[in-house]
Amino acid sequence: MSNQETSLILLKPDTVTKGRCGEVLKRFEEQGFKIRGVKLMKLSDELLAEHYSHLADKPFFPTIVGFMQSSPVVALALSGENAISRVRDLLGPTDSTKAEKGTIRGDLGEDMMINCAHASDSPESAAAELKRFFRDDEVLDY
Ligand code: ADP
Image (cartoon, rainbow, N blue to C red; front, side, top):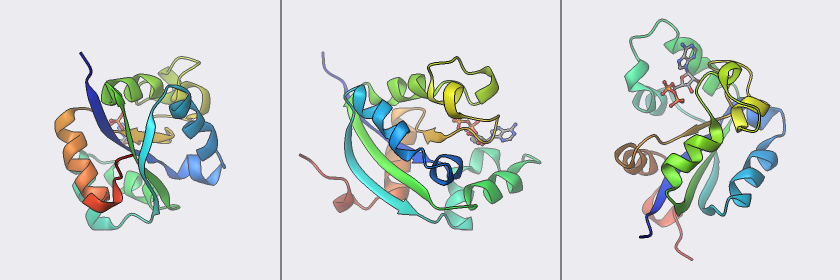
């Protein structure tokens, strides 16, 4: 049975400043994922506080905010069969130094924080995150 899902991806400042958006997007497109929404965004303090609320009490929270505001990010709404788990698999684990070669973080990430991209981790968070980054009319059906 088909399980079409849409995931919210952020190409983080390391990907943007190193000119690797194309490389990361190519890996998604090669797996058959479809771009339904895309935009370059500067992330506000408020948006990041919401997006990373599960980390708000960590000592490294301000460092993450600084990193995520060090350049614009590319937000993507990406659709496909089991997109949420399959995109996370393509990324590899949070810590790039522990990610296998062949995964995006394993090939392109630096460490625990500088790890190329964010991707939604469940259907519930995907729904909340898509609303956080895109208006309804910015996610296109085609
Ligand atoms: P993921 O992005 O893999 O879903 P989390 O939601 O746990 O992981 O963390 C969100 C982001 O916060 C990570 O992608 C990473 O950039 C940063 N981060 C998480 N844990 C740490 C840490 N211990 N030190 C530095 N940065 C971290």
